[in-house]
Length: 265
Figure 1 (tube, rainbow, N blue to C red):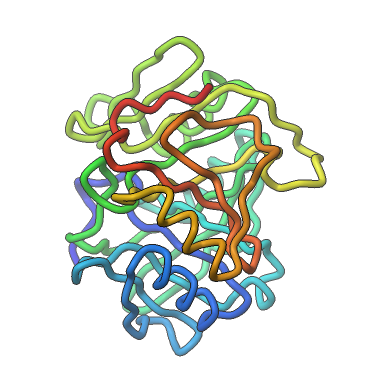
Figure 2: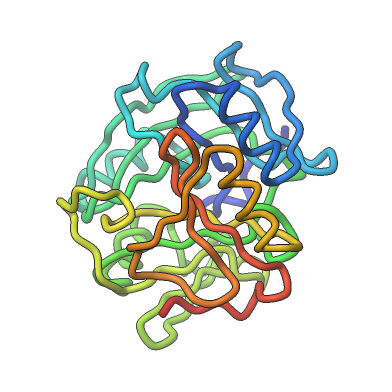
């Protein structure tokens, strides 16, 4: 673990809140080829690895914390309590925490003004983990009604675009792109969302993208292992497919050849 001094405001981890950890491991292991190690936070948690590199955490905590089954990106902050306060002051919601985790970290599950959930983490981060086109996850995508308003919220909460911050932001048509060291790590997209929509894929949300060498094969494996296609989502482009795992968690697979040139329709 390393102190997160140079990553404040950047994505620092990815976590799946599941109901059945073993079932989630079987599914993502089959589709993405991940292996799993025991997590630091007890038997309910595991760490997914790809070629020995940590990719994500999986925790059987959806029932315990009364949260939906979902992938959640975590962003590094200097002080979890102060960041959670900024979320509330700017119209967001603090759902869980901040709570303490060994050895000395603090985390909270929060949501922005439109209800898209994300996490904040105050503590050490894994040096091997990062977001980027040549890594997994490949990138993070916020589906929101107004990307520019969302960028102001996240900028104020996480310090994006500040002179000594981790990340730069650029405004490209109806999209905001977050870059760290010149590498795109997240995109905020304006589009058709409904905060009270009965289907989660139609609500404001963060969506994670995993790259695969053969999209058709990976989609077939997902379907064979109990996943399903999300056919009514109004987002996406060629070379990607949004899916639901057997527990209901949403994620997107990207054909690796198309990474780096993605723009939501």
